[in-house]
Amino acid sequence: MTHATRPRHKSAPTREELYRTALAEYVSDGSENARGKAYDLGRAFLKDGVSLVELAAMHHSALCEALRSGPGKAATSDVLSRAAEFLSESLSSYEMAHRGFQEAVGALRRMNEVLEEEIKRIAYAVHDEAGQLLVAVHLALADVAREAPDSRWRIETINDLLKKVEVQLRQFSHELRPTILDDLGLVPAIRSLAGAVSKRSNLPIRVSAEIPKRLSSSAEVAVYRVVQEALTNAVKHAQARSASVEILEQDSTVHCIIQDDGVGFSPESVNQKGERKGLGLLAMQERLNAIGGIIQFESAPMRGTTIRLSLRRP
Ligand SMILES: Nc1ncnc2c1ncn2[C@@H]1O[C@H](COP(=O)(O)OP(=O)(O)O)[C@@H](O)[C@H]1O
Ligand SMILES: [Mg+2]
Image (cartoon, rainbow, N blue to C red; front, side, top):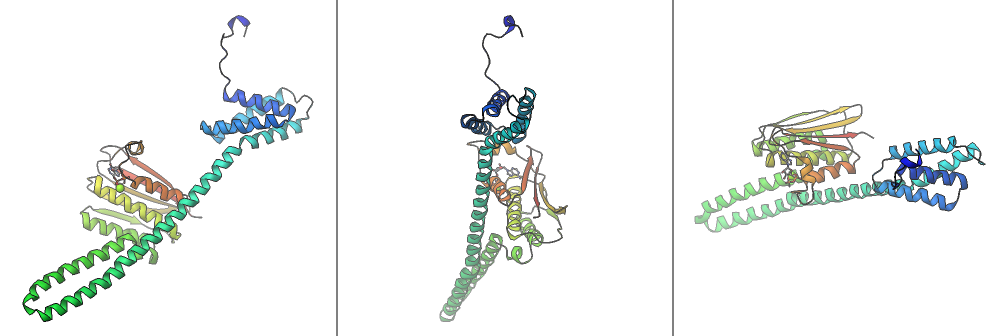
């Protein structure tokens, strides 16, 4: 470019240029100051959302340039080892972010375990302790019926109501934490859940589920909770005519697909600030994150909803 055509205002250097210049500086003098620039650049790149693949490409082209422009006094092997030091320094923010992410996932997993323990305790209290109290009420009512025979028919009515309460409490406790999930595993628990939801809501739910062996307890609970929320949403929001749950395993990866043919929604809008209506979809995502699985929501207005999750066996 001749002097006459050079732009009057030099534009800010690109990321690639910054990286190339800083790398060249470190390669030539190996100073602490130059190494510090690698750290600062890495931190800025992470903040700007530069991916590791992009950073690797940037490094590769900067290194090629450093080698092309001649190692100067330094031998090629010195250029290569300084370039490697520079790269690892620029990656340190990524490393820290990755560790932070792993810790967050660990915390999430522990939180879910505590939550599940608490749910188990409540389910047990509802089933056993409330059940015991109801037995005591039945006995007390039987005494009253003996002492006041005229009120017998009214007491019968109360007894019938109490029996209904009992059935509902048992059902409630079962849905909170189905013993079938711990005893028999995911597939029977999902069949039982779909049956109960279908009966209560009149929504036909087709289940096709088969996996060769059981998953870890935390994975079974996570998948169960996601299917439970997805079916609840299908009943509550979708106005669907039917729904389905499919669970299958391929190459040591378990897939679960929950579908409904209802009104659908736009998943992006649910995530927009201030627009969040509930926590169900977010909780599904976090449950899967905590066990290292992947979840995808596919839905559009009037197009029904499909939720796909997949989980690799360890
Ligand atoms: N299967 C579905 N069909 C239609 N809309 C849905 C479906 N699932 C979720 N939604 C929409 O996404 C929103 C957020 O769902 P969710 O996070 O489970 O919260 P909540 O069920 O408490 O509203 C719902 O309020 C609804 O508008
Ligand atoms: Mg919901």
